[in-house]
Image 1 (cartoon, rainbow, N blue to C red):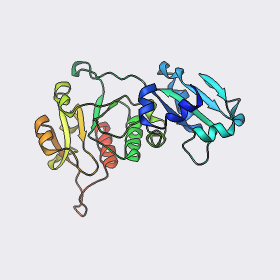
Image 2: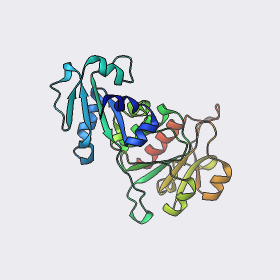
Image 3: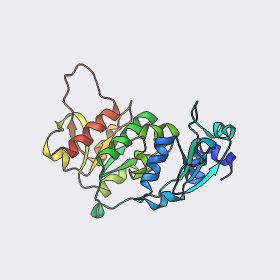
Amino acid sequence: MKLDDIRKLHQKKYRTLHQKYLVEGEHLVLELERACATQPALKESELYVTEQHQDWPAPFRKHLISNKAMAQMSDTKTPQGLIAVVPMLQIQATPDSAQTQKAIYLHEIQDPGNLGTIIRTLGWFGGFRLLLSPNSVDPFNPKVVRSSMGAIFHVPIELDVDLMSLPHRFRNIATLDMAGEQMGHPSFRGCDCYVFGNEARGVPREALEAIDPHTFTITGCGAIESLNLATAVNMAAYEVNRL
């Protein structure tokens, strides 16, 4: 790609157009290289480096660029001298009969830090597929990619998944509600899809009624009204995997 086109990948419309996104810094590039072992499509990535990293051994094409060009491409105040252009992997919806992963569905999540943290948690536990509703923050936003700490290469992500499609794909759908059953109940782990709402608004009540999920709650002392979205998803992922 031309450098001008690479700079444009900081904008969602160009990421969508080219089906590519940016990964910056030593840690994320190393995670990308590790992921190539299990996802060969990632070997189509291209690495751009400054002179200090010209000997960096990469399993994909490498280009040497100037410090000035790197600064123009970078999304950080202090560029580390490595930026990879990574293809977006094409993830297909999986019918219930072939489902081998639990699904986490996020309805109109807006905060990049929350989404990156959630992806990192799902990558840690493994065995999860992430479904994002329309009007959610772009998971390939540089802030999301950075906060995922490389987990974005390991978690299958479906975009623009309509909430009403869930009952056609999953037999047992769960969501959190203050009046629900305790999350520690064995039936929580038996669900196939776990629905979480927008940070401020949650999931519209009428939409929840339409998909008719099982409701569960995370018990607290009652001193505050709610948990951070990423925290709630993290606790749910832990509970699903608890022996």
